[in-house]
Length: 549
Image (cartoon, rainbow, N blue to C red):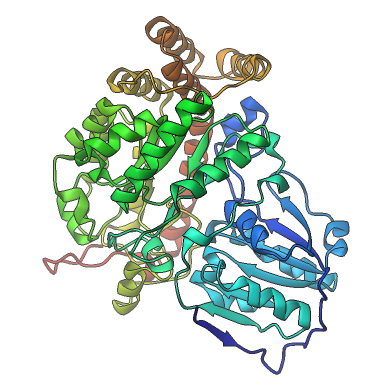
């Protein structure tokens, strides 16, 4: 395992040894409101977060047994000075979207005289920036390097920056420390089977952080993790967080077959959902095995119906068939489809917003995550924008709902307002509920698919809250009651569809609020941009050479 070490600079303090029995506070920063945060849905079920910090509890499993560990998920509980003062070391894992909250944690820890170590995807993307915030920064995956780092922290020889040069063998990754979590606070649980993706999408940082050769755990490993969760009493759904579950299709098939056998033996304790590339449609054996293993839903990175944009962004895997028919194949094969869509490619013109909406409607994708193209650090798109002089940092990139961080070909206010119109149309309550019902109609479930075992009390609590907030007080209550009536009338004998239908019902509140919030924020940005008339926010000439004002 190659680990590049950058020593402390002269301006940095030297630190004493922490010893072998140090107390460690593991902190997961808070996310801002987002599409995937489902804040509106959480309001109904009275839980605090959709999913736990899987990376952080994996690192916890790598820590020496002599360390005293405490986990603090900032989505669930506040960070108190007493928590930081208790610790000898504050360890943080963060994604780029969490950066606002992340920056505050090491600053506060330093004020209280505590050491900090930060890792995770953001550290791997922008280590030089993170070095200004934390005492120690880990770039890359921790499995095979952390033992040495832990020993250095104990001995007082730890360095400022560690770059893990090789991709670890995840078949040696330990069972995450699920026992550190407050399990009752999450709507779903997370496990991971593979890292990396074989494709080359220009805007994706997965391939630059985790590599293009998917590495997988064994079936026995993943099943051991599921048994650990089962022994802790977890009975709700599980997200397999792989960025492309079928990146290694051979190993994914073997796992799905083994999971199917395990589910049958255990009485189907968990439903699964995951993310996959659209070529799943051309793998009927794998699709069937996933459904037999109680996979219920899959997220597909569709991005755009524009073949020109797909070629531009090097998403060639989406050019090998008819996208609508491929989605329909997966729906008929037994998986409920969620999908991601992007506007703002160089080849996009003003027709793209209608084309995207029509595509979503035709495919009946209820949860359509539409966003604007961004160029994350480390991606080929980021490098291209930098070479072309189009990259700028005048926006706080947090997600695909933020102002793009590069000079767009389409005039920026046109892009932003077109996107706002698309988002408004997608999540107009009547349109959303009508599309959600169609998504259940085209989805063909099987007898092997079982919803999670939720208690009657939690079902009643969520229903009562939903009726009060959505059915009685919301502006869309008529559409709400119509959907609920149709859901029960058409699918009352299909527990799996009733479960997904109930999720769509609750999620309507989230999408209604979130889309309105995004539209309001982007409209304010548009007015500010137009008032400032900054050249950086104008557009690039198209290939024809005609300037776009």
